Image (cartoon, rainbow, N blue to C red; front, side, top):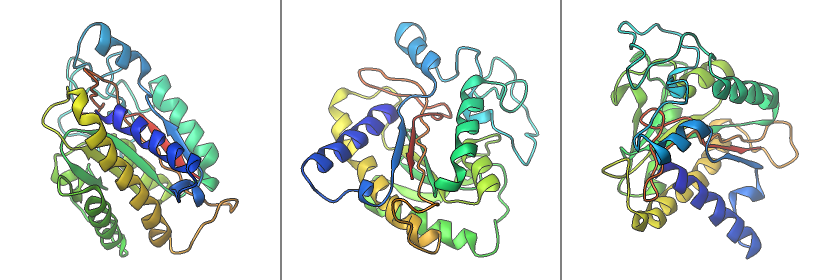
Length: 261
């Protein structure tokens, strides 16, 4: 459901632009990568309905550099197998290189997963606070985006869900020091009925719209279109659709990028 929610958000923004309604695109350029784990997504339709990893059987949302080592590294057969080394996979390598090249233009990222109904912020690989007032800023960011998404969502640190190493959000916050959230689309299963697409999509559309507003506050000053630092929102989703369904690489994750700049 993460991928369809991502596309619903994009469609809603395009509809509003066509109808001359205010949108997040009035202030920022938005970049969307609907599905980054293309091979895994294809497998989910033609083999394992709950395919989470890519074609090399690597969890892309565990394939990023991590500040901490996993004390219990998963085996290759595990659903969250991180690969032989960070950036071992073409998907993470490509996304990482693109974001590095665009860094000066980007102001934030959103990573879309499913199905916990959570707005997650760093860190996932440690329970230690970030410090320097950043924890409070992320709490505000998570709280306000959750409120915009609706009663099915709440904000918390990623580690409060479970420890996770080599994730997109931790790596990019540590590297670029810009706001990033992981949105776990609400629901009860990775395979969701088509009838829920509009409801879930509307929630994510509202969350993204609020995120764009919050990025301006988080970064300390407004960034208008054309200025050097805009907003990037990578929607990282991961692969799977079922009657229209999706399963993220970290449960969801990796790979549907929306970037605002």
